Structures are given as C-alpha cells and as structure tokens.
Image 1 (cartoon, rainbow, N blue to C red):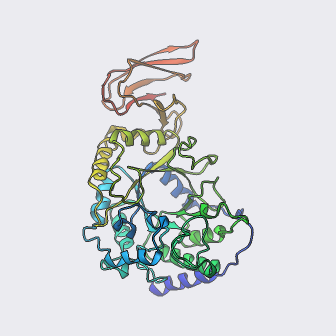
Image 2 (cartoon, rainbow, N blue to C red):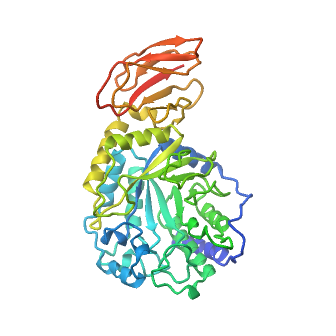
Image 3 (cartoon, one colour):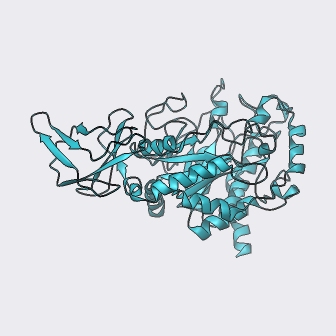
Length: 447
C-alpha cells in the first residue's frame, strides 16, 4: 500500500507539476463532469448545514490574527515563531467532541495559510509543524478524530504564500522581505500540487478542499493564470468525491463543486465580498464568531448565542451551510467563549429545532430578516416558518396559497390555529406564546 501511494504521488506531480504559465486568466474546464460519488457528496454536504472553520497556525503565537505577517513583520523574523510553537494543550479528540456536540457536521481546518507554514508532516518544505518544539502532525490528529467521530474533514489551503520566494506576489504580502526577482510560478505550482497530493493520499477520506487566494492577483494588468482546471482534475483524480470550493468571490469556475460567500449570506453582500451571482451548486457562508479568523487576544467581541443561531437559520433559509469560525489559542485550546457558544448551539440544534435545519432546502416565505423559512425535501414536504423576534406576535400572516393540513409549534408540538383569507391569498397563524427573549419561534406547516 505504501508503494502504491508513493506511485500516485509521483505520477500526479509529474502530470500536474510542470504545466506552463500563460497570459490568459483562469480558463474554464468544460470537460468536468462530476462523478456519481461526487454528486452524492454534494448532497450530503448540503444536508449537513453547519460546519466549524478552524484558523490555526503559528500566527496564533502573536495573538494578532492570521494576517499579522502582511502588516509589517519580516518573514524571517516571523518564522522564528515556529521555534516557540508548543501547543501542549491541543487535544484533537476534545476539539472534535465539542464540535460534534454543537450539532456541526464537518470542520474546515487551515492546513497552510498565507504565511506559508504547514500544519502537517509535509515533505515539500521544512517550514512545518514537525520542525517545532511540538513536533506532531496536527492534520493527522484532526483527521483521525474526525474519522473516528464521523465528522466531515475539509481542508483549507492557501494559493498565496507571503514567505516563499517562488510565489509571484500579488497585492498582499509585499512588505515581508521577499525578492520579487526570484518568483517562479512553475516551481511554486509544482510545490502546491505535491502538497495537495500528500493531503489527499495520506490522511484518509477528505470531504473537501477549500482554496483561498485567487483574489491576490485580481488587480494585475495582465490576467494571472492560476492553472486551476489542471489542479482541480488532479484533486478529483485522487479523491473523486472530494468537493472543491474556491474563495475567489466570483461565480464558480468549472471543476468546482460548491460556492462560498465570505462573511455574507448568499444574496446579501453586506460586507462587500460576496456580490457574485448565486449558482446551483451547494452554498456555504463563512463567518466569524467574533471579529477575526485567527486568534487575536483583544478580540473578545463575540456574537451572542442568539445571534449565531439566527445567523444559522437565515443562512439555511437561503439554502446554504454556515461555516462558523473559531481561532484556537496558541496553547492549543479552543477559547472558552467559543466553547460556550458551541454548547448553546448544540442544545438548540440537537433538540426539535434541528429538524428545521438539517436536510432542508430554502423556503419560499421571507419577510426581511425577521421571518424566514426552510422546507423539507420531497413532495408535500413540511414548511418551517422561523420567527426571529424577541417577542413573538400573537399572530403571523403570510402569503401561503396552498391548502395546509396542520400547523404546530415545532418545539413543544402544540397545535397552532390558523385562518385562511382566500381573497388575499394569505394564512394567519395564531401563535401560542409571546416570549420576551425568544431566539427562534418555529411553526411547522404540513400540507
């Protein structure tokens, strides 16, 4: 088996590592046809609705967020943090147990961020977790824990590198001390594909690859060719069911299996990063619990549990997953506040409310942010009306023309009286409570 895997690595590097750079932009790969197992993986991904993003690397030692290197430090001085990185309290089993208890169905872990440091036992560079005082493969531990606890494993990988000389710098990472004359895209592309091959052949099933960085060259006078189609083909050849997403803030390219929206629910673009059109692919919104992705000691501005649950509901109502971020501490622990939020979300999701989130599709009833809806799958599937208001009104009138059989309070099962106005094409639901601190009042409507 070992020799077989080595053969795959060598073959994939040879096939995809020597492609030549052209002056064209990312070309579409019109020949991509997802396999049956990939389609199944997409459906499973959409059904999961909730995942946890984990931004962790040596940048956590500075406690200034994951982009710290971009804001002034010299790359060689920054790299000295690896000599002090010893997350002695890291326990992958505890992380995944807490995440599973939250109701999340998958994680997405930063194997290599823009600072170029690899969190696994890569043979392509010494700038990795094995050359720290800690000296243990973090990706291995997380992968094993995910597989053991049946949590999906998605791996973040940055196309940008602010430390390697061969990466052709774009609009970020230009103050780190790199020599632009040493840029060598072909060499860097071969390096990336060799690393991706390691991740896809040495850690068991990988459910997704989450790319980041295409936007680094979006202001080039000559469009930059990332050679994505070749890279996507390599990934799908190694693990056909692995879904690929790219945080490029564009309409998805051929070869991609999902579409992500950074800090935004699809269609809202409140942060200005997600104005692209919405595709028919599985959708995902990535958002932070507080302000930063990576650990920042001063950033204690966490969203409340109520805010996070409502964010999850509004995201599901658009037919998308929520990938909620946590920035682990340099000692290897998840922040206490983050764990509290996970616990609260788990109590809600693992109760009756989960029925209205998992394996649902976007609903057809939306009244701003205060009333949204999800639907089950299949003919005559139930409609779940989510009233996101601290005080639930005594009645809720909505434009529903279909004949309904029953309406209940999803949480307690109490029947809800309703009255149809045929002329107006609406139904008024008489709610059974008016809490002063309500998170989500859910009416289950059966047809």
